[in-house]
Image (tube, rainbow, N blue to C red; front, side, top):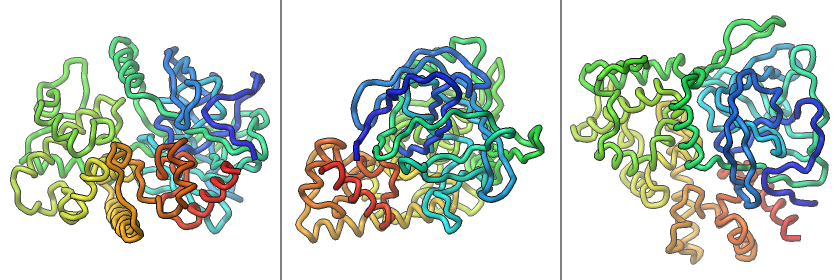
Length: 430
């Protein structure tokens, strides 16, 4: 089997729309190949960096993309999902759905009905489903065919090739985009998934986080935690001079760095977007509420915002700080949102598994590496799955075992996908 890494296509065809919307857990922004996918478009020069190395991928614009997708297999229902920040990369291998999307999230794994997972909104309602690509096995979103959806060209992905599609939009390029957006009088569209009924009679589900019950509860909790102070989260031409609208202080920036690494990760964990001014203002309110509860140093009342110490033990929090840089970075790495009770429970279980696996690793004579690699969110806790020879091969190309697993879109705590990772590694090693 040939391995094709990086994000660049060798196809020269320009006819029709690329049909493959691949789920990539190693990619931090949605990507579309064809200009025809965009319903709103803004030219913008940037680039993407392939996770596995190689030539940077050119970006020529960004905009809004709406996709008609099948709701469930063997049924006639359809949904319309809307992504408001999609990069236009004409030379990409395929279109990419990124888990770093404020409107929805993916739940992957082998389902009883043969699907490869579900696309859900933040109310846990199904919007669509994923399948394994018939040729290469990548996880792809099932689109609606004509007449509901657009006509598509044949896939350019080939049989017998292991693709590495994960790319990253560098933070420096994101900041450049933010600066250009602030200068532009047009600004950016609001993020939402279209609601109501589509013209063909299919359901178009809404998945805007701000409309969910959890988001409303979060707003209420923030208001309570700030002792009833009003947090005006409605942006306007003349921004109101409320506490939440003020820039972060040095103390607040230090707190964000300690617990979440940066504002982007903090907002993502709480179901908010750094690209929405309203979300950023709401995020400031949450930060100040959490810092306030830190200073109180007493158990939080049920109606107040939940703090990390209410969920994780001191030992678990210390482990997360030592290995991941904090609970916030740990949650972000595992695509979990602290405001969601089910996600909090899942996070605690995953953290306990990591701690048990490290103990096992130590018992077998292993030790941590005294370098920054170990402290990366994608670290070494899955090292025990691989032999010394395999680990040496992985570290030369991916840095560490977790980066290798995540670049393939594999679940770090799933035994079946761990076996799949070793099979793929065996092919690459020859």
